[in-house]
Length: 184
Image (cartoon, rainbow, N blue to C red; front, side):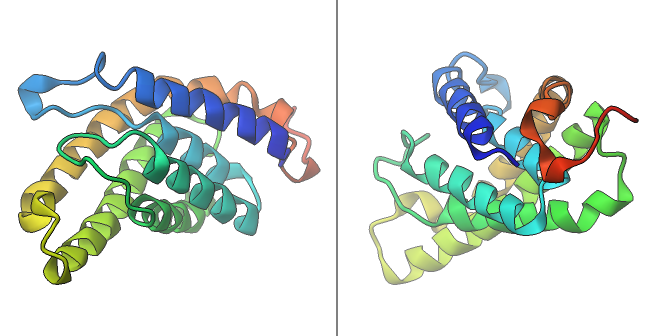
């Protein structure tokens, strides 16, 4: 994988993530916003070598942890997204042999699964943290937080369909393991 291409793509999806968060928010379903960064993580997880994909997921999760806080959070906590994205990336790595990689529907489905897996781990980590530090009022209701993350995962899967199509057409630029991607 070409890391400069990844860094440019990561910058683009992070800007989309944080700038379109309020525009694409569905307030009628509980103020959920799509996760564009997860679509890029799934794409890299589908095509990159195993260690490269996990490092890329960790970097994207770290960027999400360091980005502007969402919702009622007013502080940054490094770890939940970074570890959750690695866990979700590992799930994608396990499933990539069973799916058609170059299909937009695959990207949408795996984006949803990726975010559910990373949401479960992030909710668990933040819930355990709230047990020993009483300054995290947001995570005293872990089931409602988990339900919120599942709704975000489904919404991101719907948005991940066109995002998956867009990144698959750029596959030649990425040079994943030097493969010839001209053949379908």
